Amino acid sequence: MTDIRVGLVGYGTAGAYFHAPLIHATPGLSLAAVVTGNPARRAEAAEKYGATPVSDVEELWGRCDLVVVASPNRTHVATAAAALTPGLPVVVDKPLARTAAEARELVRLAKERGLMLTVFQNRRWDGDFRTVRRLVEEGRLGDVLRFESRFERWRPVPKGGWRETGGAEEIGGLLYDLGSHLVDQALQLLGPAREVYCESDVRREGVASDDDTFIALTHAGGARSHLWMSSVAAWRGPRFRVLGSSAGFVKYGMDVQEERLRAGMSPGSPEFGEDDEGSWGLLGTEEAHRAERTEPGAYLDFYRGVVAALREGAPPPVDPESVIDTLTVIEAAHLSATQRIVTHLG
View 1 (cartoon, rainbow, N blue to C red):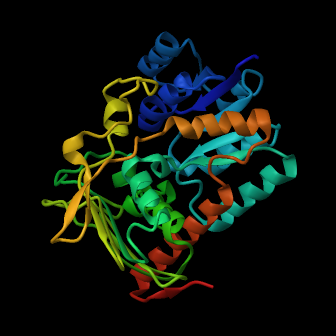
View 2 (view 1 turned 90 degrees about the horizontal axis):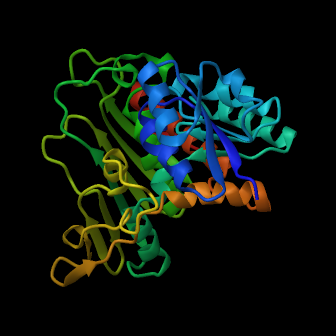
């Protein structure tokens, strides 16, 4: 069977380190073309993947069967709509849009055209989150009372770039960059949120968007999520702490897949998603606990799901409707932070 030809829009961090190697390693997909104006990136995409470098998204329409949008956040909606309009299915990197209304319009357009639209919420396939999800589904924690989740780093000197220096029009800042993952995971684990409280600050000079943000969610089922995202965490907390009615789970350190992608490891390598034993989380109580093996990380499952959706009519790996829910919470969090209120959702 002929491979699905993929056109990748953008070859920066998301395109070069995440999408391109994952597409290349997925049976049934072929990276046919890459949109980038950077000469070095054009040469790399051609040499590593045999992809044709092009300068404009419209050059993709006759070259590909699937468009992957990995360009800067502000371009996501327009580029996705431009690809859906002539009849191409689309993968969009997170965040899908700035607002839930914009995302809803993209979903409407995809349904109208009968096309797949999905969002690269790759952190659903982090090994540590897969472990938490399994423990909850197996009832090993009892009823979940509180879910704590962190993406924290110590970066007192800004790196620069649009994520830090751009204004709201760039859809930068940690609320969108990391909150898109943390909120998504919380909703996937514990269901819809009914109340949202947020503290969001700019702590460093030369930064225009939030770099230190906290979100508290009250879920419809009664559980609470506390979500931290920060570039100024001189002492990082656990990646996850989940407290249940019968046990707890604590896990430190980040999922290994991003680090290994950046180091050039093939996502098809057997050890790609395997966590080191010394980094496994602890399950039980403070007095009586044991190490719990981390589930393998599985980013490739996202693109395997894309192939199944296009060839077999399976549901997309990420339902874009679920991303609308995430964006609704992010908008509510922004409102909470700016007006210093608890936002109530319907």
